[in-house]
Length: 114
Image 1 (cartoon, rainbow, N blue to C red):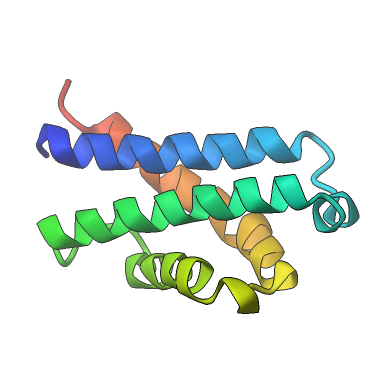
Image 2 (cartoon, one colour; image 1 turned 60 degrees about the horizontal axis):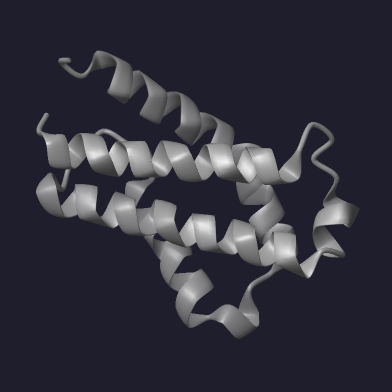
């Protein structure tokens, strides 16, 4: 894999790490729901994740990240449907899907030649 691929994977990893840092140890939905700054920060990181996933798909349409197309779709939904962003859905993405994506990206980065 080339440096461009590594950069996009690193961007995804950095954004996931940032989301986890923003949420802290407790990962409390009510705190998230009542903190506009936190919600906007998480949404921005999801945009970055989706943009990087889209760039990876342009390099290789079969790039080995599960649900890569859905990740791009989430990015588009957050950006273009900002008035329809559902905090419950975003929380579900954070809780159920980001940890899996984090493991995939870390494995891909680990397996890359140095």
